[in-house]
Figure 1 (cartoon, helix red, strand yellow):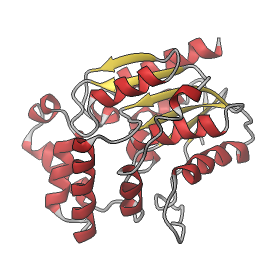
Figure 2: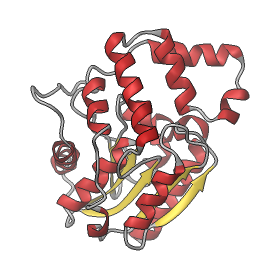
Figure 3: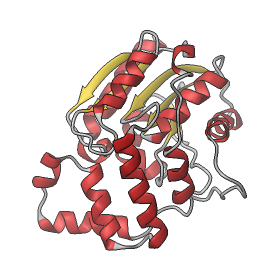
Figure 4: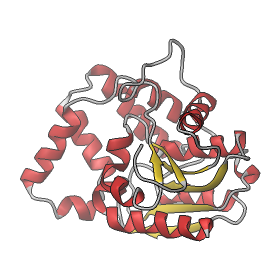
Amino acid sequence: MRGQGPALLLAHGAGSDIEDSFGPVLGALAERRTVIGPDYPGSGATPLPDGPLTLDALADHIVSSAAEAGFETFAIAGFSMGTAVAVRAAARHPERVRALVLSAGLARPNARTRLAVDTWRTWWERGADDPALAAYLSLLVGSVDWLEEREEKEIAEQVEIFSSGSPPGTGKHLELLASIDVRADLPLIKAPALVVSPSADLLISPVHSRELATGIPGARLATVDSGHAIAAERPAAWAALITEFLDAVDG
């Protein structure tokens, strides 16, 4: 938790944590808000449950972290799988959620996304530190333009970071991601919503953002020139979109 002001609750991606999903924009988001960033079970210091992860459990997990921090109402910014977590939280706790920002996300995986996720999960189960898996993830989350502008040393450094290990709950996160479906929740959302679509996302393509924006009443759709890893490629643009939207909601 950092910053002061209205609460902004974060929901991170699968096989990730708050620092990985949002790190480069945390400072900007906390300039006028109290940013609350709970890690999911199986990420950071949060232990895995004995059974499978459920979307309801993740939604309640992040909401309870805001309540424990002393906030009854808050906005939620979800990234990747965190968008579905945010949607479910808003559907289950409508009296608490003031606004939603859904970035690089989805209501449910299509066949292409499920193929990418299932490949990731299979590879991870065979060896989380496999450099080939790290290279695969680098190709998935980086846009073509961004990767082609990088020097070989930079690419090698990124692959090394991915190879250094992913959260122990990655397998369960990916299992959940492959089966998520919040389409029925979308028309129930009453809070103002901004959907941020990375135009060059190879993991969760822009068609998913359009489905979110179309399904949520009154949702606004914004595009950012980026691959899936918005925080790495376009942190300033992403932070500005989130901040400007929430400033307008908060009045």
